[in-house]
Length: 85
Image (tube, rainbow, N blue to C red; front, side):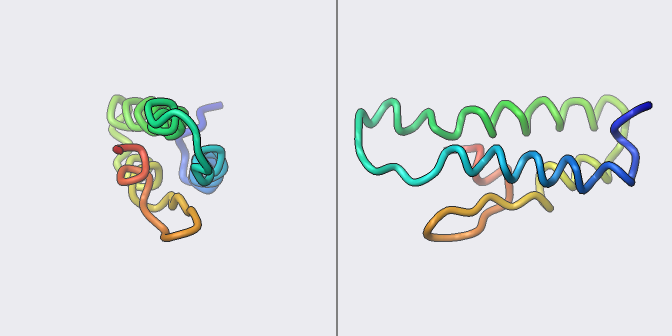
């Protein structure tokens, strides 16, 4: 079974959105460490994007980069904007 089929797209989107919530709201601390809070979602988007491009699954690429939305207390952004500080 491959997890790049259309029926799995919602799973990828939900997983990336949940992972991006771990970054949460920066309440304080070392500014260098605060900047790293988006690293897990950045790495996940990168890995999922590489897999989609390798398989030429452009619909999956769209799901993991554009359709998946990261939210924080201020705004909603697509995953590429969230992963890139």
